[in-house]
Length: 475
View 1 (cartoon, rainbow, N blue to C red):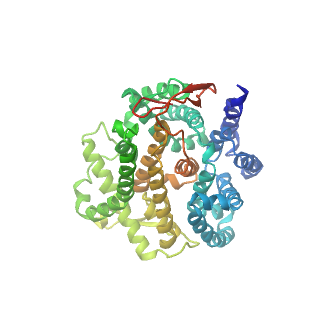
View 2 (tube, rainbow, N blue to C red):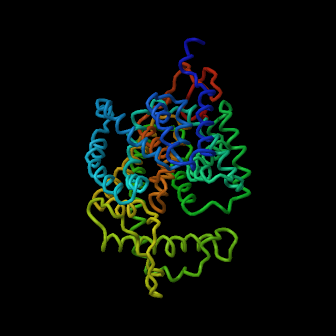
View 3 (cartoon, rainbow, N blue to C red):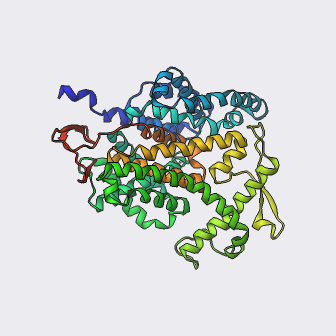
């Protein structure tokens, strides 16, 4: 047993960090800036000590969307500077250099915004840039993103999802964490789907079993809260996991080529989808303007009508308004003053125009609005390029970890197309960190072999097992 002790997951330590993070949200997140400064050394410790037990608590701490998340972004910059050789070795130097070259521009904007908008307003101007450093941090720490850590991390967020869905969480800071449960929810849905199809076995993972048992009854009872972006993310993920032979990697050489094609298709999808929506909205918006967009499943309109109404009346009008605002008032580089979208209600049919403060709900349009056309386009390419790498890294990796990859792909593509929250301070760390890590990491390689491999299950016990292609995969 001593031989494998270094590989055991310390659940007591991981639970301690989760407890600290939850207590912070309950009592200190809204208590003032001074308390957040006091926690900066703790964030520094969690990030620089590079232990997988730290990750679940770190995810929660950096999901309240406050100054600690921005601070963590600068820690990532510092962390990367001492690991340039590894960045070059992994093939991420161009990405790192691009972000570094952008940094002076944002520091100048920060200084100017601090003078005009104060401390909070100044650092908020870095939001959509600083979160991309979490990709680099994930790439450099891919070795601590393991199956046992991922499976353990899911459970507290499923509990949070259950409580939030049932509307029994009174604390506003804890409610903020609900935004990040979309990724966890998709993971659980895919796990359950593959389990009921007898393609995976999670008998060794108590946390996944508990997560499914807690989640499924609540989601069935509150299914009406499952909305447009979530449905799109589910469809994208199912596009990759539906076929059993592909999921279990029965034909690895064929799969590798197929993944390359699918990666190109899925990365092109949000761009094509956005362009078509922009072109069709002026014609179709009036056909669906009477549809109740709030009631997906119980109203007079069909689900199909609600989805089309949501697309053309809601998103289409907003995207056209954002595009018009960028064309008329946008800048090439990031600017001190971020332009608000001039929303033309029903495409000027009633001539009512209103300026809105919320974003474009489309990542490329939002980044071009807030970061300038050049930087917005570059950051959008980085975002989609990382999703492409994530898909290609599925080959020869463990199917049950690939569920997390496909969930990230589903959420990433859906939100890029119809939302923004993966680049917000609340959700960016869990999404960007895991995307960076799982686009670079190698899990247990699935080879047909009689030699047993050592696997540590979710309760920290060492167990000998075998992996074979085309057989049920174990968590």
